[in-house]
Image (cartoon, rainbow over all chains, first blue to last red; front, side):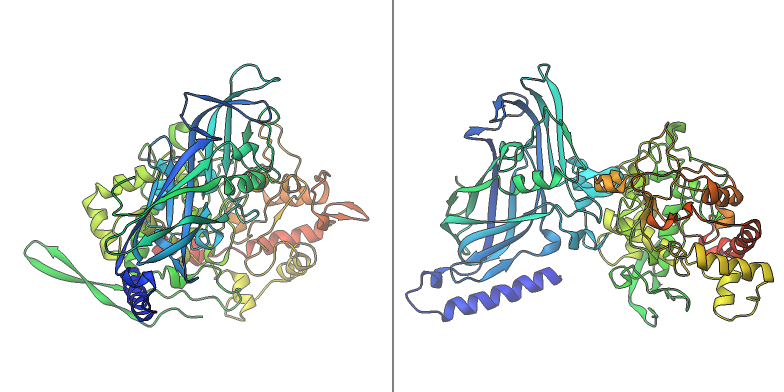
Length: 267
Length: 344
């Protein structure tokens, strides 16, 4: 109920604001609220990500066949063309996207009408949320468990679960790789946030429910700004040195490809 | 610090054949003992209620939380041994599998920030996930447990009565178990009575001498009346090559944490044998002998255990005798006999 109240108040305030602004402002016409869909399209470089099918060779001459790409996205914030930030209700702001289940869409409900120019979100679960314990968790724990995003022995979340097999000059037999990244108890916080400009304004109103199409380039996880060689270490989990590099790379794998404005039912 | 003094306004209406019976849920008091530090647990986020506490207790003693239906939390955490597994170096879980660490005591959990020997979680609410999902302990999944509870009409009603929102879900499940653990405060040993100047707190000469030795030589790590500073340290135990347990490294991924384990509380220590993270010592005498002459050096050995005179803690026989007498007065008979926490 708290959430709904807040949304209602937010909507009222924003609507009031919109109706009071100058007459030739286009936001005048944007009234009410609607959902925004963020579609996470997983790719490898410029290729589509096909699990357990295609292989991908990176700049370190390692050839990867990917069997799993799951990650947690969270704490969505939207900025409109007047610089105002709409923060999505925190307790409802945690999502697992999973290539293997095909669940790669995040739908943010009840977004106040407006012209949005950028989106900010986190990769993983922030310490603030973690340190709330069970409070506000709802069913997210079991959702995370069912999608292999819970570190059972560490009672924490895997922010990223990236698995498959690889070969390289030195590793000629196909060998499993596993990259699991998350925070390390109280000793290392790997939660990162990213802000992406939408390029095209995303318009929300009673009639308009935009789809923001993001591309997540999985090649960046190991072969981005930081280079991580699977030949050197094929299982990267709780490593004080490597997991922060994975976290930084992962946060930089997202770009906004395009925005569909409209009723939300077409691409 | 008193969290009390309001009766839950909401009454829960429960259908009982044709009648409606109002069941009242009341808030429980979490009273911080005078000689204790402040609570670490955020009581406001999960205020213990009578029905929440009772539900948590039922869950604590319910084998349903494990894959084979027999291993409850209470299976390894027995009240008479201050909620440890008496006589077990390692506990056996489902399918007779055995872990690699000794069952720690459960008491005063609401005063701590880090849980498990390696600090695998920094929130009490999230701790039960570890034994539940560990395949050599309870071998279940959270999803599996929640589904079993949803299928149970009695649990469904109990969850609805204990919590205003959500019914049977992971959040309320963990909150209920926490409410039970938050109430498990051990603060009535002879030592506590001595500290609070209460009746029955008169120390013998040996006990008083032991306390002095303890304060001089042990209390820098076993600090406050919780008898731990909550830190992770390598106390110089020779690593067991068969287990090669690296301790906190498994959580932090940092080599500087090699062989570090959480400093355990010494409350009820006379009841919690065997000792150390791997339960290698069967008696407190052995523990003291280890500190005087059993320690091995390594890169991460705690600074406080290295002196100009060598490794360890210098203790003569008289001091050891004093310490052993002191350990006895840390036993809280009220706590281990408290029916609120009893299985039956």
